Each structure stands twice: as structure tokens, then as C-alpha cells.
Length: 204
Image 1 (tube, helix red, strand yellow):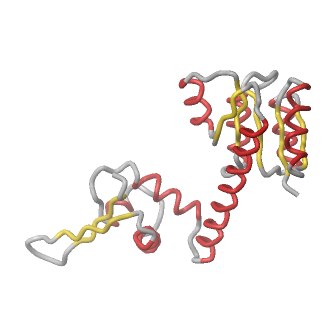
Image 2 (spheres, rainbow, N blue to C red):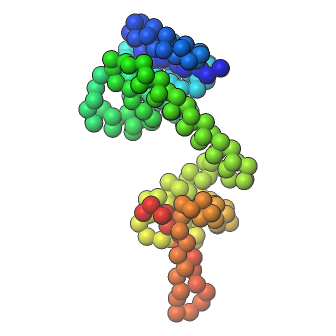
Image 3 (cartoon, one colour):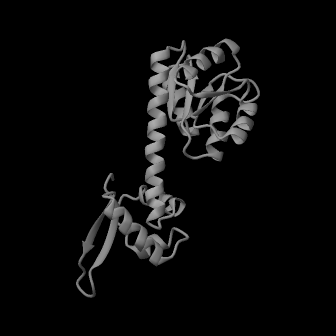
């Protein structure tokens, strides 16, 4: 059964969200503070977390950051009356995946929860496929984080100087990214010697 963790210090709001979630046959876990919410998260491993912005002990931003440090992929939906961009920027930087504005409207909240659960499942399948191909997500993430910041194409030798990964491994992972249509290969022909392959993210 899908488990939803609600972190909100308002008992009435928790009750409302619980009723909404139980309508969809989701199991609900409740926490009143950011700190206790993280403790419940560690014990229950929920499929999705709803986090209020204004919390006691830890505010919503710190709570989101702490949960994201534990789990890099669980959907984190923020509940807030704030609609200012700077608030959204803080939460996205901390690792939030979506927002639901208060006062809560059942159809909107249900659709957001369902969408985030579906997206999380699709991403989990993609990670399984990557692992099946012998690609380690952490190593892939290291290479992607480095490459995505580059504005000019780089050779594998140039990449190797900046990431703690062997030449052969970088070559294999770059081939995977090329096959995934994420990275372009640019062949550079010099006046002498063999041509060099250089790599760059397509989004750049």
C-alpha cells in the first residue's frame, strides 16, 4: 500500500489531508514537527512526503533538506500559503519536487500526489534499467554534473583531470550518454595524429 507522510503542526489540516489520502486508499503517517517528521521518514520509508512551510523545531526548508539528504528521489510536496518566487526557490534548492497552496483543495492535492507518485515510479524504472546495464547511478551522476557545466567540448583525457574516475570508466559512461541521446560527440581533426573525440551535453 502506498504510504504518505504528512508533516504539519496543524491538527485540522492533517485530518483534512488524511481524509483526502484515505479516499484513495493510501496509508497515512502523521508528524507534528520537522524533526519528528524526519524520524518517521527513517522508520516508515514513505512513498511521498507532504511538508508544511511553517513548522516548529525545524522549518519546512530544513525538513525538506534533511529528508532529501536521506533519500534523493522520494517526492517532496510543500504545503504553503506563500506564493512568492523566493520561497519556491528556497524549497527547490533544498530538494522539493512540487507545491500545493493552502487552503487545500482536494482535487488539486490528489492530482499532484498521483502525478508525483507516477513520476517517481517511472524514474525508479529508469534507474533499474541503468543498473541492469552495469551503469552505477552515482558514477553517472558525477560525470553528468561535471559535463553539464561545461560550455566547450572536452576529450576524455580532459575530463579525467577533473573527476576521480578512470579513463576506461569515463569512456563507457560517455558512450551510454551518447546512446541515450544526452551527449554529442564532436570529432576534431588536427594537422597531425589521429582525430580526437570531444563530448558535450546537447542541452548546452
